[in-house]
Image 1 (cartoon, rainbow, N blue to C red):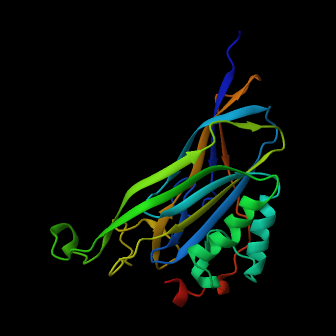
Image 2: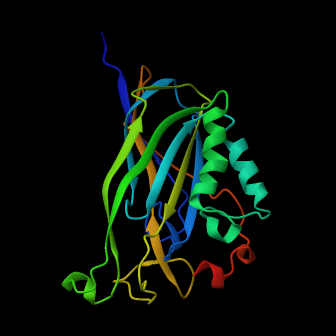
Length: 242
């Protein structure tokens, strides 16, 4: 029996910050939503397995990966309900949403929708906050530090992919709360600009997996998503954003 070919696949979010496939989000406690999709075009049928998620755990709340052609319908309904054409990441607090309300509006319908499969889910199970102002490591900036004690990535063991199948990554993020967040232009504090004068947190929501196929495919393929919406700066004024 001839061995099957394995292709290392990578799916990268739209890039809007410094570095490859990095997107910036406000350096405060506002929550935000990133999503992008991939269509399995111009590739042979195969099976995806051995999933890996790359994300900055200090900023991630949860990440979901869905398979299905109709996932975009739920996301489009959510975006249109905000009343603006906006660019991802969507800053939820600026549109009357919280992490909880956005997940309820998006994830719940997807879980009940026919023809949609939850492939992967990353969730946080516990947090511990260290706000000891007398600590040497914290006294300089007088801030709380959060520790993610555990995170779980649960994925299907195998996922069959046919030409035309679609995958959608949905990521919910927020910067951990600080007593006095740094808002200087020092690259030592944060090198990723959200706009010209305020710096922000940089995040990735990247999935990787092995595509096992009978066809002769390249050893590795990387997909980079494009921006999904045009940006309306008035939708989230700076006084709210920061």
